[in-house]
Image 1 (tube, one colour):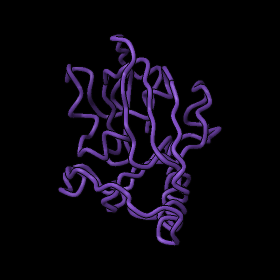
Image 2: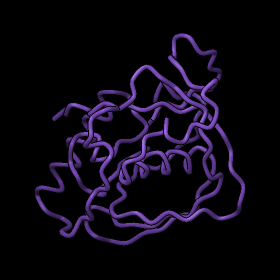
Image 3: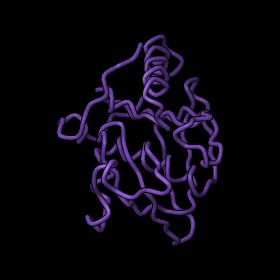
Image 4: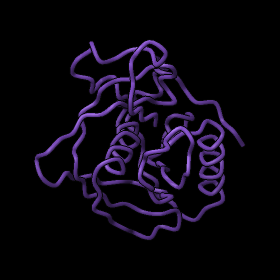
Length: 175
């Protein structure tokens, strides 16, 4: 089922989400189906449970050949529950981001270039990955939602933040 995506200003987007304690349940399977349906309907690169009003540490991302991201490298279809993120190296890179909860706007956002992340899949199996570039950016963006952070809170220079139809955006990333 396609769910309504909360928009910036809704206080539910500012909460720290709760850890998942039960895996492989019908409720978790339904949540993931709804998240996938919603993300696909909106051509998103990822979605966090808090964006649809569910206060759990669950994100999904990747698994798309999306016309909105023709130059984006492939990111594996991932369910990431109760994530732990650790940058490796000190290098950051900046890039354009958007968000389904901040429609119509884009901002130039710094992110760690390389990242180690670990967490659980829907069955409760732990996994870990080392990633970089676009994959690392998508993971950081989605996991920020679990801590009540929206990408505009990370914008350093508000001269590079504005409406998509006004900005000159060569490589837009709209998570």
